[in-house]
Length: 108
Image (cartoon, rainbow, N blue to C red; front, top):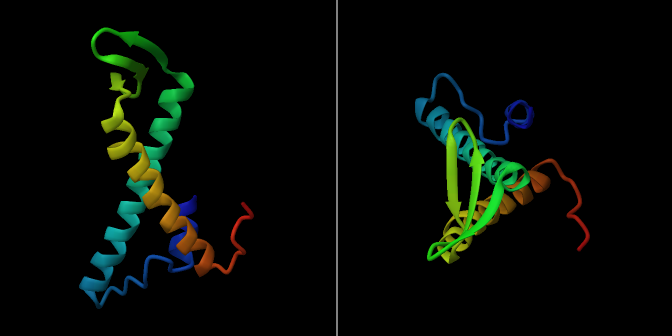
């Protein structure tokens, strides 16, 4: 639904059929945002529905099902290179969307 609304508002650009480069750029931005949303929702669902356990010597492991059984090792690499990057990139895009549709920024 969000992607449909952003398409209608031409947030990702105006993908003119006559300009294939512009269309390609708009689709690349839209697909990148869609992937970030899916990643964030995947992390949310894993934590909401998965089982957390401690395994020696691995550490904390989150077991969950998403199409198949999966495990996430909750180490520094996971937090800094996966979740923090996804949420930081999403935050930048969401702020851009707010500016684009002229919403006031959220209060801290």
